Image 1 (cartoon, rainbow, N blue to C red):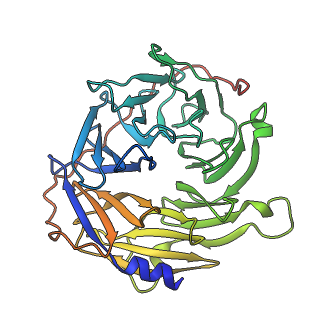
Image 2: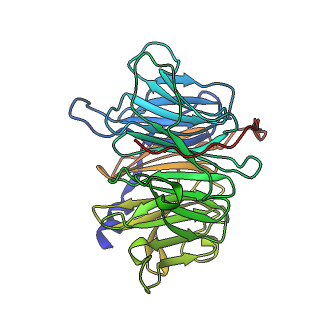
Length: 382
């Protein structure tokens, strides 16, 4: 605990990058895995102007930009095995693959869903073999759709392997594969449920290994614990729940921590919303990020039945922080928000110029177009 607190205490702004349009939100962030061939990692961000941008992590300069179709994007993920490949999901019913080595700004492959699908969440398994995307509810159905994630040259689009449609009955807001086991995937929904599936099973009923009820709309889902045998979720009502899956088949309680509203239960800082959560394997600690309307970021350490304030990062953002990514390799933090700023925080970094007041205009809510179609069913995972 002391080592963690000391490390976080020295976090300062190392680099700052500003979007060309001051009204652009940074909605999602992912970072490529370190490789011996690359001198620097690459940051991928998802923007509210329907673009995906790649940045050099060390210099924070923009390397590439992909302009997506006129639909709502819902996430960006690097390939785990090839840092040149980036995936994104879209409300037009497709997951797309982008290759930074290919000239032009078009996707090199599309993974198309069923006609009724409006994708609002997705993830890629740790071995890149499976893609899973979650949909909005259409009629009575909310789908988890699966594809073979391997890139197939000269194939413009790939059809689904199948889908699950019985385990959630409302919008599937989160899909999160296990960090080391490609067969396990956790999902969260506005129905309040966090489900864990073993997709090696032949059908949806057998695949559903555990269900945890948050009793609220689920915003973020993640894995934690030394062997990643725990899951946690952040809710749209700023709640935090943490479960131990090893206790599912025992008489012991599975809930490690439950806080219905984090805004009212953490002293020493002001929290208006929760940004994200990160499990630090090296320290076996679960870290939460909370934000203020003015852009301050509070770092919170999770313990059993208690969350404590460690440090508040100030002078960075001037508006709501929408996304964050923790780089455990060098204990750096990347954040993006509604002030059109992308920031890199590093321990003992020499701070950059202070934040500027936000000049953004209030944006209109982007509407998703739903196409209704027949229900689809799971086919066996190959």
